[in-house]
Image 1 (tube, rainbow, N blue to C red):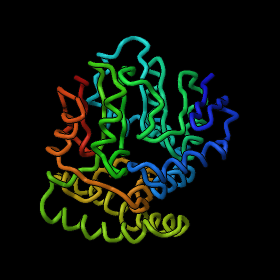
Image 2 (tube, one colour):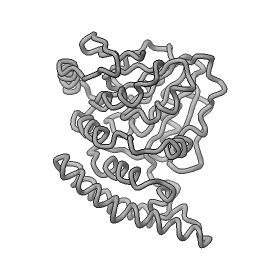
Image 3 (cartoon, rainbow, N blue to C red):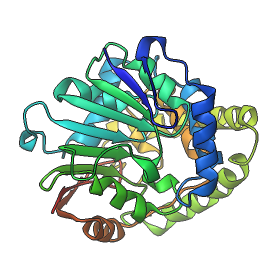
Length: 308
């Protein structure tokens, strides 16, 4: 039976009966005010997102398809038998659902109430534990983990480089770490970057709205922009056109549910950073990683490195 760790209060609870203790959540929120590398409004926003989109409508086939985009470069073969690792910023637990069956134990870590969703979604996995913590207080010993990953998380904190280093500190020498950080469109043409800059103006406005309005606007964007452009890109691809630089072509094989989820993620989040491949390479090296490999496929940039 998986156990939920609540370091803020020192309590534990079985995951199928888990309800986040308000005292524990309150203490964590108080810590957020004192820590430089976490933003309460961003954490709250992701908690609301994953409660709204708990991934219950995501098929196993699509989850496997999307997961391969991230984990295709992960060096599974170098992990020891019964490897123990962590998912930093686990959210709903969708990636953990893919990883847990392949390892000995997985620590799922998230500072938001999304940890409730992850606990529920992974209730059948007895080798998962759940921690209500942020990147500044990862509840694991340094140099203790066989692997780790953080996908789409560290670009939403004030200091991405410090967050990456905090994750790498938990790894044993020789352990792999997989990361996904938003790219700065460094492999896209000028007009593509111009379109993004225009869309980012809308994000800055929508993301500060109350959640009900953020949700409504994001869903309109999913229906009126994500879905049509994704389908048009697929049509152009069928006609023999190259669609790598076609906006939102990455969604041409994905469900409307995923588009709705990602539209809320993209336009509902106040804080985001974007990095070039070279910048990510340097951050990874500075954090203590070597043998860094980047995926050459969407999404950009996904990279894996080995702790020195």
